[in-house]
Length: 136
Image 1: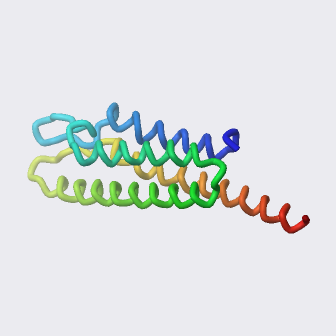
Image 2 (image 1 turned 135 degrees about the horizontal axis):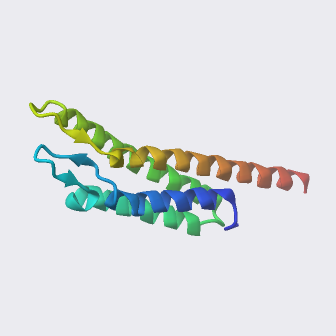
C-alpha cells in the first residue's frame, strides 16, 4: 500500500537525490569555483537515474519483491556514485593548493541509508503477508 513507511523513505531518497545535488556543492576547485552536480553531466545523470528509480519503486507498491530489487539497484548505483566521489576527493587532496570537499559528496550515503530502511520495511511487510498466508 502506498501509505506505508517505505514510501516515506523512498520519497526522501527521491528528494535527496533529485533536489539537493543542485543546491549543495560537491567540491570547490583550486580557483575557488564551487562545482555542483549540474556542472558534471555524468554525475547529474546518475542523480536523475537514482531519483527515477526511487519514484518507480514507490509506484511498485503492489509488487514488493520487485520493489525490493529496484531498491537494491538504486543502492548499487549510489555506491558507484559514492566510489566516484571518493576517487575524486582522493585525487583532489594531492594538489599543492588545499581544496575543499563539499557536503554534496555525502548525498549518496544518506540515500543508501534511507534505501536500506525502506528495504527493511518492505521485508517486514513481506514477512507479515507470508505469515497471514500460512494461517489460511
